[in-house]
Image (cartoon, rainbow, N blue to C red; front, side, top):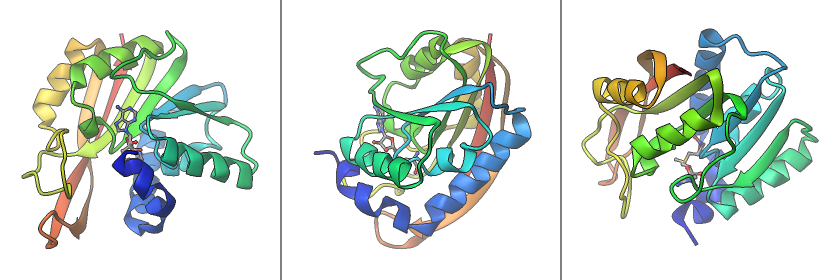
Length: 205
Ligand SMILES: C[S@@+](CC[C@H](N)C(=O)[O-])C[C@H]1O[C@@H](n2cnc3c(N)ncnc32)[C@H](O)[C@@H]1O
């Protein structure tokens, strides 16, 4: 059982997570002309907080994650709200490929830093997108390693310039990375600390 499986039942109880999703959804709407013809994929979707904010702007959404606990909570929410344009998929792109050229938009919130091989997963997003399709990422700016409690093997946030170059190398153009917001939470030493979040966007070449 992963740590995300264990956190899933209480994930939505932390208000800063929904607040962040609302800001990411607004940034996506501002940057991308969403339509009901869009097929989108949210990767590392957790309980689907972000996709619930966007579900009325997009035709179909595939929500993918490798935590069965998160997907169980999400499936219950989809059922409770009678949502008819969301499907879920257990998927780990570290070990599997996604569907080819299937999406107009791939988006993720606070998930990229959990995936050790950023280049590999960005190349997989590129292949999942139709030419001209959009990738949108909201994640942590470089931090001092205090964000996560317990054992953590992912990235201590991202340097914007390095990420921008990597996105271009992986087949994205029109790459933009801007400030999204900051939030304060207890760090690994149980002291309040402020972290900043960027919003990145690019188009599949
Ligand atoms: C910090 S949580 C963010 C969840 C959600 N996006 C949100 O902002 O509320 C990171 C999510 O990424 C998922 N995740 C981590 N590694 C993954 C992988 N290799 N493949 C798919 N999902 C992964 C976790 O299960 C978890 O749901």
